Image (cartoon, rainbow, N blue to C red; front, side, top):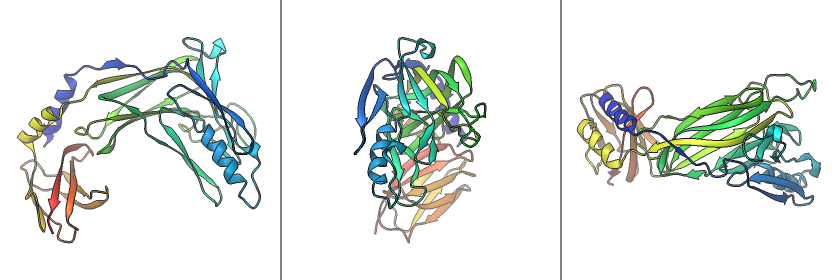
Length: 336
């Protein structure tokens, strides 16, 4: 089965990478608004990008007013700002300023992403449990890297109030498939710098067969180091990315057809068989239509998987090598 992976790599290597525009990557166009259910607080964001400010402020004021001891409206803060000072602009006349600050009593990194931010708030301490992101940039190509020009100024210790501690900003990129979920990730740590420095996050794919259709880019003003500092500031400008064409499904089918593990019968009743001379050491995971793991099997050459206890319907399987790379995918129906 190693031949499948090597042949697939040969297919992708034959396609050179090319530059691709990141919408709003020049940070030149901004939108402004206000957020808050009782006290209006100004929020800003570059075109095609999103922060967590409006969610923190809007949900925070609504939630804070419901607590036995209400949280004051001024406990919620904006963390993403339009910057026009030439010292902090790399190209054009604007950049993005992202700042770590407290939301109520918890210290949070400022964030900027090309996907929608979602703040998690609960009714028990610590009340805020984190920020997640949904969506991203739709793409028909396979993203390979993201670069940006940055300046980074670590903040102050929230207890001693002294500057000069160790903090690192973060660029994370995620390639997503509607079928396979996260199929590739890249991370770049952004160290302190008072001059413009270009950083790059290269995407490493753990699933070589699924098609990437959504690409998520997120900057955070803290998170790469063990200690988050108050008032750490990250300036971001001129974000670019590289991509390459997706390997066609037909090309993948031709490679897999010549080297595949045979999975049969389909439809199946009580047993699924796996047959492949080079299957030893591979792992097959069987997923229900809802994405839940229904069964796993470590393959040894010619194997049988008992599925008599599973409900009827369609199931999806992935076969991965010992490095976790997906080398074969498919589906099988169980008749009941």
